[in-house]
Amino acid sequence: MPQSLDQYAHSAADWRKTLKINNQKTLTVIGFFVLLYSAMGLLADLYLSSLNYPDVPLSVLLSALLTFKIQPVATLIMFGIAALSLFVTFSFHDRLMLLGTQYREITPTTATSAEEQQLYNVVEEMKIAAGLQFMPRVYVIDADYMNAFASGYSEKSALVAITRGLITRLNRAELQAVMAHELSHIRHMDIRLTLMASVLANLMVMVIDMLFYNALFNRRRSNEKNGSGALLAAIMILRYLLPLINIFLMLYLSRTREYMADAGSVELLRDNQPLASALLKIQQDHQSSQEAQRYAYQSTPHESIRREAYIFDPVQAGLESTGSLSDLFSTHPSISDRLKALGFRQKS
Amino acid sequence: MGTKTVIIFALIAIFGFIVFTYNRLIALIEAVRNNQKQIDIQLDRRFKVFESLINVVKKYMDYEQTTLKDVVKLRSQAEQAKAAGDEKSRIAAENGISTIAGKLSVVFEQYPELKASQNCIQLQEEIVSTENRLAFAKQSYNDSVENYNATKKSFFTSQITGLFRAKLDFNFLYWQLDEAKIAEQENYTVKL
Image 1 (cartoon, rainbow over the protein chains, first blue to last red):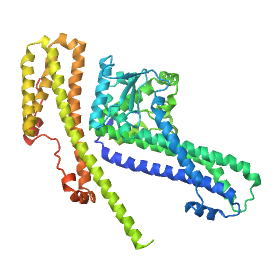
Image 2: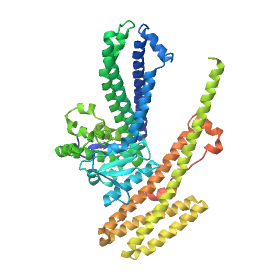
Image 3: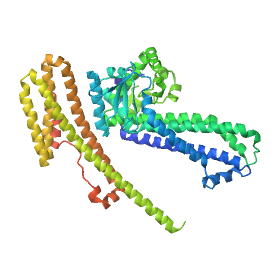
Image 4: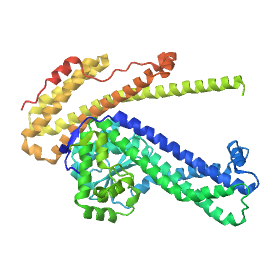
């Protein structure tokens, strides 16, 4: 991986296009998620009604459920539970995100150094550029690694947090680009979106687990007259397949949102160079002192909660150069892909 | 389902679309207006910041006497132009204040004792930030004008705009420099 931006061919970034493409991708993923969730509810209902009416063929039961001749109780309950858990998650999430770190809130009055004052100014400038109605809270995390994240889905809970290491090693323009990336996460409502997806994914896995054990237990007394054998097989397969599908959907979603936040940063700054050089710096920093970095991350409790929200996925750093496996399971696109989307192509 | 129900559903859908579009355009218009005022807010902030800044620098030099007068003079020009609705001379006056910001930075360079002080580093950060805020406010205003124009002029929405011209159809101007100013600034080079 080249060490400086000089080794890249520079072109303008079409942020409008990036935003549009990835927005469509997000809609597809979310639609797929909701569809999958409803299908899971329908499966549960089908299973329950096949227990209630053992002599009726499955196809008849299915059409009866779809036309509401039998109330799809399980589906309705599942949507109720989803709404409830989303509400609970939304109420506690912002406090969760800073868990385990040494952090301090920065306001114009509590800024103790020129650096902190600059950080606050930069965030406020980006707030003006984004036309946000509210000022997100700004936190500094006392850690030496270079990373930053945003959280919150409303005015009250919006926050950006940045590590001490990042503030000291980036110049003003780069800092501004990183903060623009984080504010873009907030204005694109990415936190709400990914939280929603992960809550739905977890609930789906719970439902399929319940069905699985129930089916195992009931198997001995089922008489398999109405083709519920096929239903059982479907449940068995889904129990192992669903978590995998979920993981890939979540990763895909998270990556499209990262591309969008990068594009949003270019949109606010009208310049793609600062973000590109900031990303390169952050990556180099993670690679150059891998042992120290790993220790810093590991010594901070609950680091995994923030993994997805960070501007740079720490898991990527250790494994990046070894092959494509880490790329496959990373919540973020690789740095070279992100640079490409920003308009920086490696010179060969 | 008879033809009647189909017609009723179609009417409800069309009515819903009109209401939805109307409300969206209103939101966009108000966003443009708010962003327009944001420029004023940032101009006002800049004036106050520079005034207090010059007061700090005062201790170190006589230079500031004229500078402060310049700022105050340009400010009142801008205010008058604003009251008269004369956007051109207002922008000219505001641009005048911008050049003073540049002069202040040069002054800092000339006074090592001033430059070294912690206060000064903060003040220079303040100048940069203030100018950035103003530029970003203008950018944000232009973005919201783009958003509104693109929506207003697009198909179907433009038909609805036609129905409520008085309420939905406004011609917001993009913030921009005039031709002469552009030519002058194009040719500008740094003289040291």
